[in-house]
Amino acid sequence: MTADALTPLRDALGRVHAPAVGPARIVSLVPSLTELLFALDLGDQLVGRTGFCIHPEPAVRAVPKLGGTKDVDLDALRALAPTHVLVNIDENERPMFEALERFVPNIIVTHPVEVEDNLTLYALLGAIFHREAPARSLAAALSAELAACAGRDWPWQRVLYLIWKDPWMTVGEQTYIARMLAQVRLAAVAPDDGRRYPVVDFEHFDASRFEAVLLSSEPYRFQDRHVAQLAAAAPIGGRPVRLVDGEMTSWYGVRAIEGLRYLRAWRDRFEAEGGAPVSAS
Image (cartoon, rainbow, N blue to C red; front, side, top):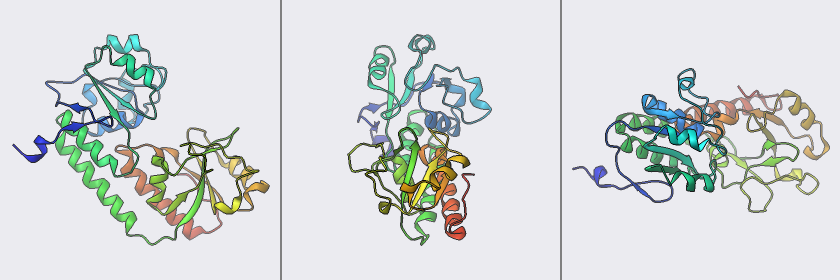
């Protein structure tokens, strides 16, 4: 027996999981995890997902939808008789988790915060669902992207990363998004109120605290017109405003690999083009 075989398979709550016996019936209530399951060649064992689980196309269309991440149809989920349900601490709410515990044999709780946490996530799901080889391949690919980012010498730049308007909202430094940005030496700044996703009041949040503004494509879909509007606003103080693909910064799992590659190219363009607009694509 290998050392790996002796390592307990613990989820984000520290609960130990045993490897699945026979084919699993998996429900994923997290878009990033749904995409990861397909990358681990588990699409044929995925029996349910949320309406926000939209990748990978077109394969994901064959999996029944069960509502949103916070308003899952529990009766429909129960009817699928899942052996495993995948949830996330940030994206799914505790009352739903407690309801699932009454009839789901195995609930796997996830909570990546550091980008490197994806390595543990790959290993956990790979071991539970007997997909160790593809999990190792994903880990090698992510490690290579992390090393490629670490090898660059961009100067550190403070950025205000906005995810919503009316009210303006940003991300705290303790979030996964902030950790992704840090891989390309972008330091996310936010009001010092301790919240993970603070509201930004530009009357009291001085523009001297940031050197550029990033507008995410999700959850609010910022577009070119928002770039122009915000760039002309007095509170920004003439600082550059850029679009960024929110899926590449906020989706974890297998998307972290592509996300780091995207951010590296984005940062290169930002440096090369200076004050010129940088698109989200």
